[in-house]
Image (cartoon, rainbow, N blue to C red):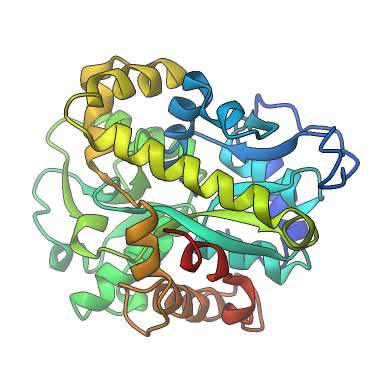
Length: 340
């Protein structure tokens, strides 16, 4: 996903722009339309993660228009979407719960109104031949893009296996470059997400996945995060958008329509449907009923609150930002709680 140690969002933006293959154009700032006229579209940034590519099904089926919505989805490299939302150039963004905290730490407050999914195998730790478990990584060099979601996955995996952060050497690398970095003889493993993970597996013979987000469901939630000012004046529209999402999830999960949904999603990212199916299987999509459970307040990873408290601690510990973000202030359960 969505997905360097950062001290502020401004530093995030600078590093992202310098380090990522950003072919997307940052949209010019749009004037906010009133709820009554609705002449300006609601702009949502989305990128190459199955839980967000799923929106393509709703777009092509015309379900947003059918619901009376004027919504424009803008396709980005993930990091570029963060930059655009941070600059108030988007009304909403598809972003992981942890990366939303990074945005908030820089002064742009977006509230998570819905979880599109949680990662269920698409975020992985890949090791070279001869390394069979996380325990074998002690004393080794591991490449990861520091401060992002798979650094969090790696940290959690090391903790699970009682390995101290000082027992490994972290090599900082941009996610899209990790397959090349992995080919280096000095790097034993990488932490990365799909589809880049598959590129790395192909690049290094004998490599394999030794840990994934499937081992820690709820560690990484992916969300629809909305600008607070826009949300306050367009709540009814956002309720409808959540209902369209619910319809989309059911269409993808229904065996009778799954193949059609996979074709639409695969076409959007230029992948064969048979190959893309594995990425969908590694993403646990969440409909409205599932969201009601996820948005119930709790301290465990089955709650978006507990998961976000956990990543908040990680971000401060690793210098992503210096002061904890008010997690409760960036989670807005009201909309999903009020829907049937």
